[in-house]
Length: 364
Image 1 (cartoon, rainbow, N blue to C red):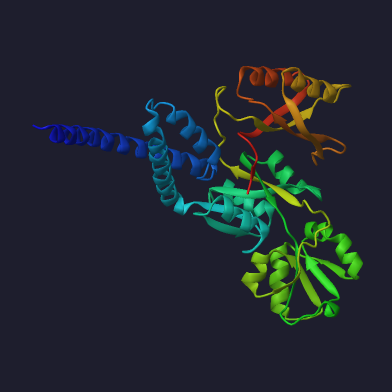
Image 2: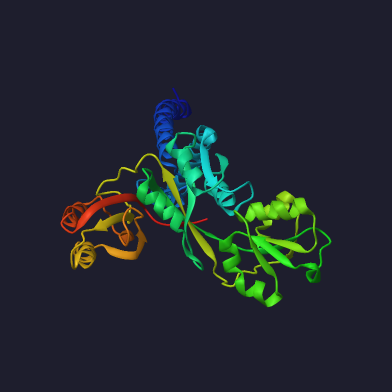
């Protein structure tokens, strides 16, 4: 056997071993896809991909080979994601509104392979997951201009679902009209109350009468169906394209940085450990009706090294003038300090519920 034959034999042996390891790797990818479907998580995780490439590339000592190995890793990642996309093709994501609503647009960005299921309202979308009709629900929790979405916070407090991820999406509001409509023809504008609030200054400046709709996409659809030139909708370009409206003016929201934070709600809670990279958590709690209980609860959180990014109160509806608190914090709540903090909170809280934890907030 000459040197060429020996080299080829070695390559064949390595290829045989690589084929066995490739199958083993793809079996693990199937488990990843199943976990992501169960917990309402997207396929793409760019931060983890770059971390894995950086870590694994250092294992190749020969610098002449290292750049080729990086390409090899990227190809493996792409193949793994392709399989995950195929396996998640049957995933169902509930959202509030009709096709073309902002929630629908964001859901498609996060879960491009899933079937997005429109629901009548936030409660119906949430219940679709509880009942098992959908795998997860994408619901808004806060707008940078108009504040919290109280109805979703109430569903989180009283319901059984968990948050497995939070995503921030820029919201651009546009003035949408039936083709041929001129600015001077418009007398009324119709949209969701949040959108009307975001565009209040523009509406007042032009003297339009605001009319509330269930959501922005419904408003766009109504204007398209009416075919009138004296009424316009406020909504997205995607909705305009779907229902055949024309964009008469763009970026009419008062704030130049108008974004909405969406949370993914799932039946299954993400199980994390102290070594996981989850450094965000959402917690719901009620305090005992004694002097200083709320202050003590806040102190306990800080004493264990967790930073509160947000603390909001909502009425419980069970008893007059009683409230629950919605808290967003920084830190790995699965670690020893997190578990000790939760135990210490029981001394000043009636109940504590971890709504979810996640690695970081993602812009989509």
